[in-house]
Image 1 (cartoon, one colour):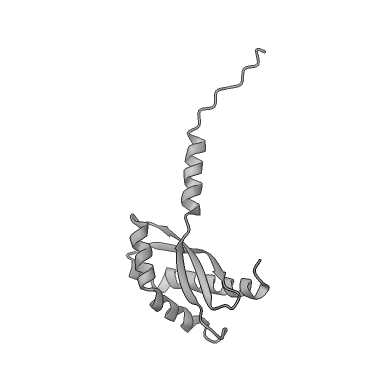
Image 2 (cartoon, rainbow, N blue to C red):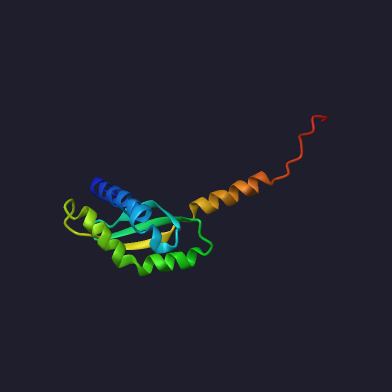
Length: 122
């Protein structure tokens, strides 16, 4: 269970990272639509794990590698936004959030089920 401080810090990072990916860094990744679905922060607020959902991309692995390569630049952009609100700019780790893909897969499986009608002749 995260402390109130961690939760507040995580929300701040999530909001600002989302804006960075939507406005400032969108062209850096070939027009990929990137959403920050969740941010988890370590107790010392030194490390932030950002979970990203990627849309309009064919190869998510290559897109994640590009994001990892630009990690220092993204951290600098984040620092410019939150430097007056925090003491330490956290080290950023990016992970692919596949929950939307999983939900779509489960939805298609449930839609394609063939359930025969119930017999009432018993």
